[in-house]
Amino acid sequence: MTFQLVGSGPQIYEEVMVPLWFGRWAEELVDLLSPQASESVLDVACGTGVTTRLAKKRVGTGGRVDGLDINAPMLAKAKELADGLDVNWIESDVCDSGLPPETYDVIMSQHGYHYFPDKPGALREFWRLLAPGGRMAFSIWDGHSPYTNAICAAVESHISPEIAKKQRSQRETPSADDLREQVRSAGFSDVSIRRQELMIEVPLASEFVPLHLGSMPIAGAFIALSEEAQTALVEDVANALSGYAKGARLVYPDAVHVAIGHK
Image (cartoon, rainbow, N blue to C red; front, side, top):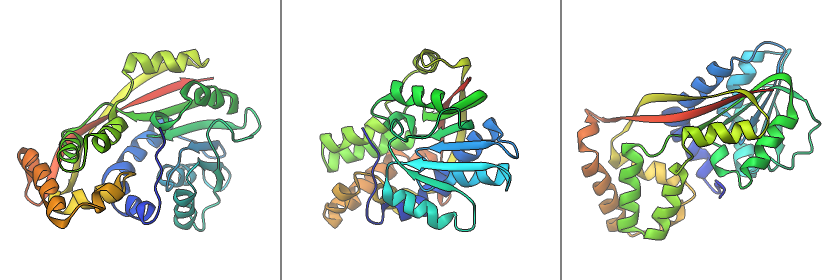
């Protein structure tokens, strides 16, 4: 399973999903790892670079920050957004970067681990690239939120069960115990799993759902619907989330697990 965006997907992702969703989780992850001035940092599956940019601001001019992603359009957007920042961008699969061992003091990945085809291989690569005494953390969804449950049900009803299965798979994640064992098995010590919960605020379904689905790998399937079918899908989401509507916003809880390990 991979997360690939093309066309206008990276632009929508950065303008909509980053400020409303991923930017907030990025701040939590970078705060937890607390990269210091002069440290070297690798952001794996960096996407459009929200965590990468935050890390660079933490380490300053004396530190090194690299952003790695397999998706060329996402990296192109990341480079554009980081203009003026001294960040090195690497287009590569996580398991095939060719980077030298023990290069980084900090390795992080926000919502990338779930999409790695070879998760044990990715963790072994994290271990190989991490310097002795270094630390690693990655975030991964703790299952579905009220919003994503509503979206997946509407997609199944108005697009297809197959497309809904693809969308649901983004939140079908390992348990905390499974994550802990996976990280330990890769050789990390002092392994811990922290659950972080935030109250998420997004526009009402009529505005947000088309933007959200337009930034997802299933964007084509949504856009291919008739205008009537798109409206019906959005209305189903709005009805399912009516209890979370606060004025002109939807406000609902969401959570991630953060896996932390040391070398």
